[in-house]
Amino acid sequence: MKYPIVCVPLLLLALSCASMRQGSGTSASDALRTREVGVVDTHQDKSEEQKPAKPAAEAAKPASSAPQSEPETLGDQVVAYARTFLGTPYKLGASGPRLFDCSGFTRYVYKHFGYEMTQYTVAQFHEGREVASFSDLQKGDLVFFGQRGSVRNIGHVGIVVSVDEERGSFRFIHASSSGGVIESDSTQSYYLMRYIGARRFLPDEPRNP
Image (cartoon, rainbow, N blue to C red; front, side):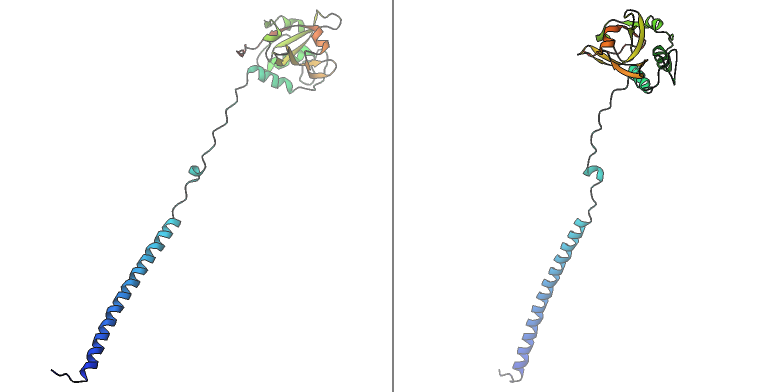
C-alpha cells in the first residue's frame, strides 16, 4: 500500500513530539525528587538548631559545700569578749568597763557570761575548781601569780587565751599595772617565776585523744 508523500513528515513529527513529552516528564519527576530531598535536608538542619540548650544546672553541677567549722566553746567566747577590752587603762580597784584592775577585769568578763565572783584576787583563787597542771589548762581558766615582793602571795590574775601543750606554756589576757589590758606569755621570766596556780569556772572541755 502506498502512502502519500505528505503523510510521512506528519508521522515523524508526531513521533518526535511523543518522545519529547516522555523526556520532559522524566526530567520534571527528577527535579521534584531533588526539591523534596532538599526540603527534607533543610528541615533537619533547622530542627538541630532549634533543640533547647541544656539547663545550667546540668551544664555545671554545684561544688560540694565546704565543711562547717566546729561551734565555739564557751572558753572561746570568753576569750573573744575579753579581747574587746585590749588597751583599756589600768586603775587599782577599778571594775570597768573604762578602767580595770586585774581582778576587776576577770570579774567583769565572767559576769557577762553569768558567773559571779568576788572582786578580790585571793578570793577568786579559792573560788572555782583547781587545775592541777599546765597540761590541763584550757581557754578561759584563771591563772594566778605572786606579788612583786612575795612571789608566794597571790597578787595578780589573768584569763588563759591559748595553751601550747608541746612547750608547756600558755598565753593569757590581763589588766597589767604597767600596760592596761594586754596579752602576755607565761614563758616571760617575770610570770614564769611567779606562777602559783589556776582555777576553772567554765565546764571542762573534751581533751584530744
